[in-house]
Length: 124
Image 1: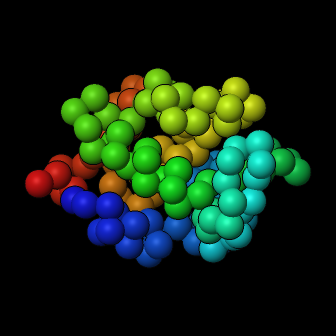
Image 2: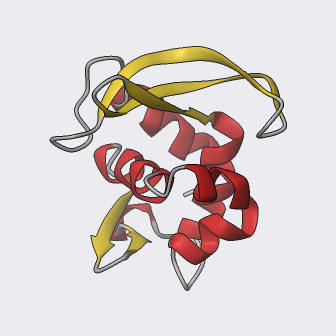
């Protein structure tokens, strides 16, 4: 499955109010994200609660890069995330699994230990 179809699956399944895990909830979708620290300017994405009063922002460009890793033979993992987003990983290690759970909730991935892999339905 290509990125355009994957993005549609995410848009259809990940909205404000959706619980990714018992501790992670989508606070808002279609949020404008600007962050000098993370070199993100005028991008849209999701705001995800990570603990009481704290949140992280997940941009569409972050999801696209991580989806490319998910589509690879080695799958999406902490190491794959670190390749693209070392500052975010250093600030909040939960980014790895929040992004992974977005893919799971959208029906794109399954978790095998600490690695997320594309579901059989999405291969091809």
